[in-house]
Amino acid sequence: MAELGLADHLANGPLDTAELARRCGAHAPSLRRVLRELAGMDLVRPAGTDAHDLTAKGTALRSDVPDSVRSSIRMLGEESFWYAIGMLPATVREGSSAFVKRYGHLYDHLAKNPATSSMFDEYMTRRALTFTVALAKRCSFPSTATLVDVAGGKGHILATVLHANPQMRGILFDLEHVAAHAERTLAAEGLSDRTEVVSGDFFASVPPGGDVYLLASVLHNWDDEDAVKIMRNVRRAMNPGGRVLILEVVLPDDETPHLGKDIDLRMLAIFNGGTERSREEYAVLLGQADLTLSDVVELSADASLIEAVPR
Ligand SMILES: C[S@@+](CC[C@H](N)C(=O)[O-])C[C@H]1O[C@@H](n2cnc3c(N)ncnc32)[C@H](O)[C@@H]1O
Image (cartoon, rainbow, N blue to C red):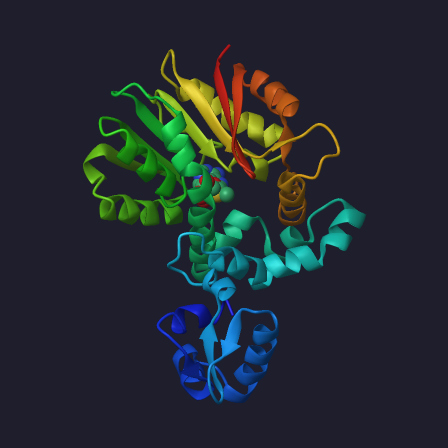
């Protein structure tokens, strides 16, 4: 349903199966069987002979609603991500990612597959919405500060922070093929004059001269050794008196149920060494990059804001 965009096609009212199949490019008799199952799941409901309407629950699969889950469902069902989860038993047996064995490192895979890459960026953008607004509200930035969004993706987080802080400037840093998207996002947001987009590899260096360095959903993709390399480059680049903001899940130390433990298994499946961490683990990691963890605030079920300052 997410992949075919059925909810978007049904957004303006019921359609009969033949018309819906035509609009989403599907085989009508096959689609009819899918719709029968979806009706049983209360995602669509019959609306006359061989026609269907969207239910309230199905509306969450529209692309244009505030809490849309379409991009995350698409990402889960995308061929390589689906493979990663299906192969989790093999990954657990061997201790190395079956995904990496088949597709290579995620970011090399995305660089070679533009359709998957744009699906991933869309998913990251949606995912960030829940905590970006909280981030922009919670952080008081000096008006003249420059924020460097390290591995900032499409620029969606930077755009929200800059809109909330009209005097601030921003630098978005990411791999070349992602930076090109970010440039378009920031231009569309009317922020070209306050932003600079820089492409590069954070294992080599990150843009110098920032007052605030933001790393959102970056460190959990890497093992401790790589995460420390990235943080050392940030530490080297930052202005005196600067600070670091890390947005990640922070795992509880006990056995309480936590969404982070589920996300951690996705990291296990997709990356060699990718992992969620506890507060103590972040403190140790930051210490190795000559930084001190100064505060942790939970922003949403799957993101906390970890603040660090030079030691
Ligand atoms: C999980 S995404 C997070 C994007 C964004 N910060 C967010 O929260 O939506 C990780 C980002 O790291 C970038 N990245 C991966 N390897 C990189 C490298 N070696 N140098 C710079 N950026 C890299 C990817 O292109 C991707 O945009």
